[in-house]
Image (cartoon, rainbow, N blue to C red):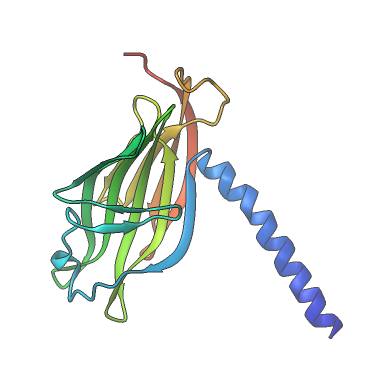
Length: 197
């Protein structure tokens, strides 16, 4: 019994110790590794219509039609969303085994809260799932996600959590990730000034 307690304590310490390391590698860009199941059972990712799709995010659900969504709330405010990019990759025998989808979501009312998401899709046991969600604050010029499919390098730029007013972003955290054959692993980040328009 004491050995079990010791192992649990070591595991708890190790998992807690790894968390700051991950944050140190991605800055304000958030990474969630977990499984989210969808009702679709496609034979391949090429069959999935990501432009007309109901996305399950950690905090909300976004239903796109023709790559976009817009709805207003009463008495004021609303939400807008748009598909930015879809990358099909990790091709085996001519069939892509993974898809990376980038979407932009804007909630507005008294103030606005734009956010960006990069979602990693695959088919597991015949069902469509996401296995990774990368999110970032998109309230600054220059934010977004780009993916070098051949090199396996994902770059995500999000507004830094530097406590500047909403109107006046000063810095971006530019996080890079490398593809390991199953998911994107943090490879570091740098802080860069926001380019003024």
